[in-house]
Image (cartoon, rainbow, N blue to C red; front, side, top):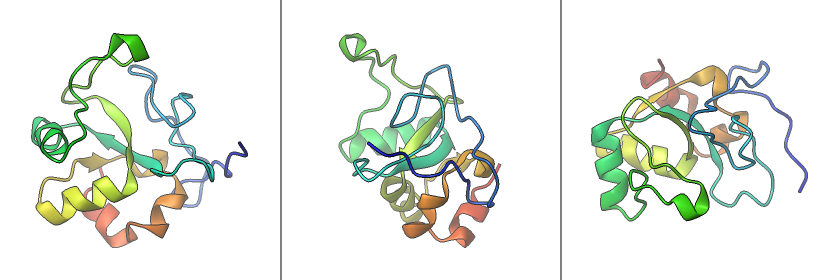
Length: 122
């Protein structure tokens, strides 16, 4: 797998999203991506109870721990690399979490307009 350049939506070096819990398609703490990342896990978002409930409702339970996969389950205030399309869906439904722009990969802009990201920026 060839990683895309680590550049954020602001055009600068991609900052770390989270080490605890460890996030990212590559589990490197950054919202890096590559061609094989079909979900485009590039939006560094701060979890909220509302978003976690929404995500579970639409079929992606991020709050339940799965220790067999090293996944602790997310709780409000955790930062996580979300799929860009899920973030956009949450925005459309009125429950998008806040976004750390400097830690959100530029590939996000292929799916989510910058204006939408700015509405939810930390």
